[in-house]
Image (cartoon, rainbow over all chains, first blue to last red; front, side):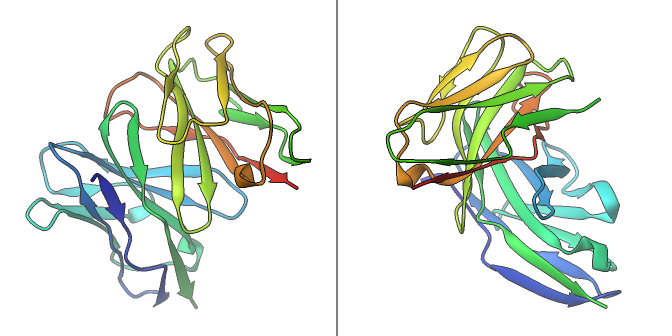
Length: 112
Length: 114
């Protein structure tokens, strides 16, 4: 079955430290992978996507993600977290036009 | 540009009532989508419209109907609301119907069905 998993409901990190938000997927074929961020009472905002090519993808606000085909993972990373990065992060995978699956979300808390 | 707008922001319905959620985008996008967001489940695709005049079912279409009124507008209708349809509904649009296309989301409509 096609699926996306975000194994951590919440990630806590201190400001200035590196952060990682994990995502694994299970789809047949070549997936298209996305990360979105949601701030309270707002819609989702696009951060970055992997289509093909370089396994390290750079996106908005200093975020990057590493695609690992052998581990079927697409973890979101940032070298130095900011308090303003605190939000809900969603990993998503698309493998067909009407098959767009989102993970359950990971709440990132960055403490001063 | 306002981007993707949704109305209403919040609605309370009684079981069996009907309502239409409105969505409009001013980015001249071809494709539009309706999702629902439930706690612990992420977003699930209800319906999408690849282009004006076409609509297709997503993962959870039961209990919903959609209308792509024109290129700008894509509405979602609940004919007979049920408590299980209590959720936050998001509309999204993308430039073209390509697999890698980025979607742009509206602010959401919170629906409570009593």
